[in-house]
Image (cartoon, one colour):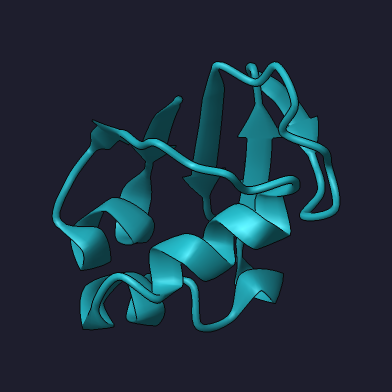
Length: 81
């Protein structure tokens, strides 16, 4: 599955996107797998309340199942203006 990182998430991880092999059942499980990789992922996902997620380009939450997902994107909340 493709995992995309935007804004400060991308800056902390150091990648705009990557393809990962995962057995994660939910977005929350994927975050746990990624966070366990190394410190930069752990820092990026330290406060998931400061993150939004999209699965297959649709806004989702961290309990969203990943069965059949092709893409997961992580980004900070957007503000209007």
